[in-house]
Image (cartoon, rainbow, N blue to C red; front, side):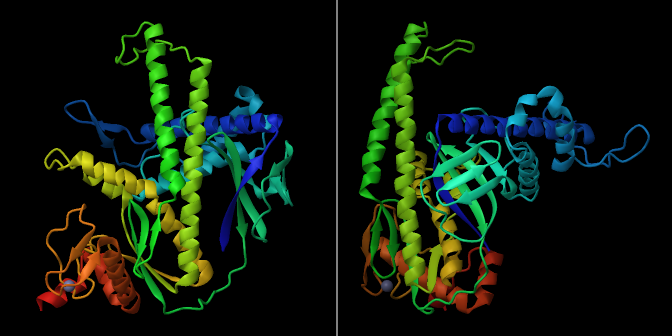
Length: 448
Ligand SMILES: [Zn+2]
């Protein structure tokens, strides 16, 4: 099993500028590969243009060259060979960093396209300086970790904030920058052990929410950390300050207030603005840290305490898209819903699920992911009757059929637990749920 540990780095000035350069090399390589991939695949499969002049796709035929030989498909490996042949001539400055840094982007691009072709991800995009996340890859041959130091070839020893948590073979590492902080994520191969949970039959259902981070079927609540909203307020204040400063700078540059900046106009960034920008970056970093800490605490607690953890398969991406609707079917209450959805994304549901996934494997917990169309909030967890109407602002309700008093989120968590346990016991139902997408065993029982 491969596990990863992300550790903050404490580089000196020389080392951090080396890191910046390495990120530049990785970004340059990616963008070159990205452009070549687009160009070569266009040459290989000519584009189809419709009557309106819009590109509607690529011609699907086996491309041949002038001699009738088949042109091979574009691949990361082939592009890498072309790139390496050019490097000494065109970009000799790249040689100051370990070669993996400009080798890896080709493999990354290949797998990004593979995921895209399979429909698992969006098309890969160009990495813009200052916008894309700065990072680069290091293979295990050019790093050695000893205590609180990582030795990187062509650079030397860099201090780390803590020791490596796992012992095993280091497979690779990636160094990245978030909010001005450098960190290294090390992938380590640890021996496979099949863990057995000490409470294998104790189950919990978890309803993830916006205001409370999670409600458990035991009735316990896990609130968002208090420091979060405090820091978010601070961030908003800084963002307002920056936009005020930007407006002032625009007026100075001759742009009317409230107007968009015309192309080609240079806005002078004052020292104070740079200062605000840096503070904004730091605030973002702090918020991310607080949130990640809370998520790790929750996922560790759940997997340690419970042999079965049931969660809802909330498709965060789908939720943000749904509120807007489309041209034929515009959404209602878009602003209200997208506010909620943004909050939802903030809770970082996807991240929490990822953590539960890998931590469950370590503790031997079974993770049950139930279908997101199951009406967990509308179903009474006592009698199983489904309510037709349950607006988001109702936090507590009484079941009209059995009279049970419910907290909205705890009731949902109880339903999630029950369905999760059924799913684990009856793989058939699980299959069925996947197939039809919205099987609701409880509703069936009620109507029968
Ligand atoms: Zn009821």
